[in-house]
Length: 110
Image 1 (cartoon, helix red, strand yellow):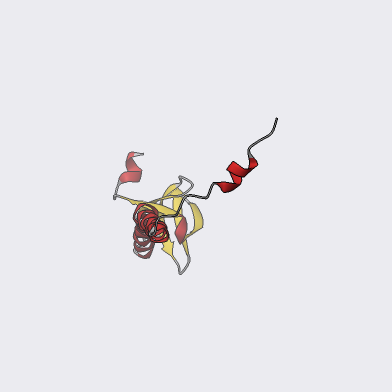
Image 2: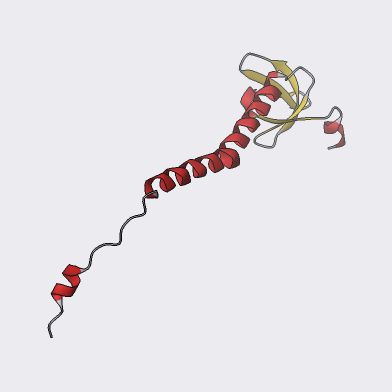
């Protein structure tokens, strides 16, 4: 069995469109813009809100930590806070561990 080698060699590659490189660049830019608005921008917004929450902590605020511990802020330091989670039970945490600030009186209903 013999293959027509001359027919295979004679076939040329299809010509590339003239704007092929520009189309690829535009697709890459479009994907980056989409990723920015879908992933990066919302994450930066959440980080900004969390920084404002941590900066606004004051004595007497009722908070919930990332670990799910709820308590009342007793002392606010530069990088650490002390929260009271039960009568005479105080825990020292990093400020960044605070997940949310509860409305006043929320701990009494729990």
